[in-house]
Image 1 (cartoon, rainbow, N blue to C red):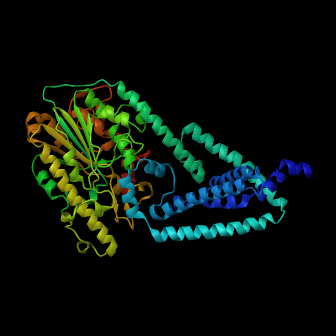
Image 2: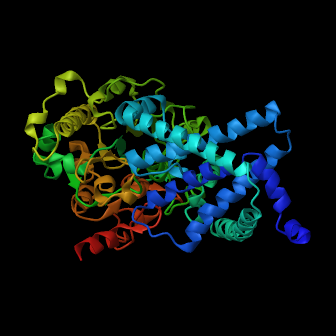
Amino acid sequence: MRLINRILLCRLLERMVAYDYFSLLLINLASNCAYLFFKGGFIPSFWSISFIISSAVLLSGIESLFLSVFDYRSNIRKVLYISFLLFHSTILLLDYYLLIVFQLVCNQDVVDIISETSLQEATNFICTYLDVPAVLLIAASLSFFIFIVSKINHWLKSRQCCLLYYIISIIILIGIFDVGRSFYGFCKYRDGYSGPQYSATARIGHALLMLYNRIETINIIIENNSKVTAQANGENKINVVFIIGESFSKFHCSLYGYELNTYPLLENRQASRNLVAMNDVVCWGDKTHSNMRQIFSTSDGNDISTSPLFPVCFRKAGYHTALIDNMYFVGNAVTLLSNEELSKQMFEYRNDKEAKHDLGILQYAPTSDYPYLHIYHLMGQHYSYSSRYPEEFAFFDKEMYDSKYSESQRDVIAHYDNACLYNDYVVEQILQKYEEDDCIIVYFSDHGEEVYELGNFIGHGSAMSSRDIRYQLCVPFLIWMSDSFIGNHPELYKRITDSKEVPFQTSNISHFLMDVCNIQTSSFIPELSFINKDYKKDRPRTVMQNVDFDRYLESRKR
């Protein structure tokens, strides 16, 4: 019996139990279970349940073994034990809050957003989504849970149960195999969305690893940029203005049939020959940080480290490049637009001050020699919507909306539409600034926005759990061409207007812009420019890493 006890680690487990093993185990289990709720309607498999249990057993065992090094009454042990509990409690609190409010858990996407969010974005997020009653309810439930756990732990420590130790030993043996199998899959396929997702600690560890990898990716891109060669052919160089909006919903834009006139000024432009609204455009993902990587890269796939960034190509071709940004600034996040070295490679000029409302950043726009590439990045309709426009643009009110929405929902929708109305005015002012030049202006949103169309939810970042991903992924895409542009480039103008119904993805915008400006560089891929004769209309439009958007649309029709 003594030999069996030694083989099954009973003696070791007795010591682990004495050092609060079960309290750590139960709180790990509660934290791991968040992922099952996140899956929504998911029927747990044997392996998913096994991983949830075994990973909690293993992690709790490691923590208890570490505690057992110190004397039970040691202050160091007490501090470490409380630290472990606080760590797991914080993750548990965050997981279940995200689960209730956003149908998300703390994973790579959340860590990305936190690391790549400016102070202004973070403030707006908290003002919009902080649900104090929900936080208090979860905190109270967590406190009660920890109290119950401590009582159970105290009861177990007062009893000697060798059978329990046998069971735990067997679970650990299964766990070693199960965890090993899962991490082998991660190492081989770099798939962090399989087994490790069931463990809250593994999710955070994986996310931090991916954040480190992104820093490495930025360093690789810096090297790629330094090797770029490019030239702009032709006598009449075309000036380019590129406007990136925020959270601009195609389904709240009167240019696309929305019943309220949210874009009257641009509608007037559309009535002339100068503005084209493309009808079938999707973005790559449902978050700003992921879309920005795809928009600025010249890569034709998910891996942006293989190619340079398109403003570098323009600059090497003789263009004067500038970024006028109301969201990202050098040094405030881990992004392509916040890295100092990348910024120097891409732009001759960029502003270092933000504006309360988007119109204010026009004062920072430079006067550049021809040809130029000016990029505007607006706050647009990013939450909180009521902060996105000045009082004089409060035209829409809650009385204008269907009674199927609650009073508070109608109020939010009105704020969003007022933000659209102001956005219309801001874009119109940008158009007026450049209308005397030989210039093309492209405007689209980084991603879409849900505004109560599918239930009691506003925002973005949850497309994969949405009943209809179109609200977060289909975006308005507007092309305005000056009279000088139309007169100097009639054949190019025709190619653009004839492409109004062509399916396109915003991650390939760099190839369209280089095609327009006839920039010759090895990074240009003609098959990705929707006005090029070699453009592949039937090319899969991959969104959210691995979803074929057009197949998704077909499946909804069945």
